[in-house]
Length: 133
Image (tube, rainbow, N blue to C red; front, side):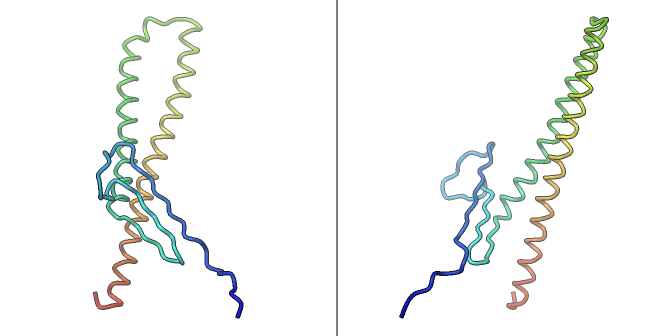
């Protein structure tokens, strides 16, 4: 009898650690953990909730920082004249557009993570109901 190589895909484990969360021994709340093994998927709902809130919070923080920067620059703008003022204004417009884009992407990512987590929860509930839970 000869053994055949398994056709199953090897286990893949991805863990991302939040940069803001302190390390907690034995706690997985500060980790976004997705484990794929033999066609099964394990998702940490609390971690996905935290990731979603963190992304949306970062977007809001960027907006606040941009508002503060714009206010400070407006106070200085009468001091700048001529081509230096024109060059700065052009650069500021590009910067503002790029930061708005980043803020929108972070916000959209936060919403997408929340939506995915909602779908995972719904699928988990549907599966539990199948078994009488």
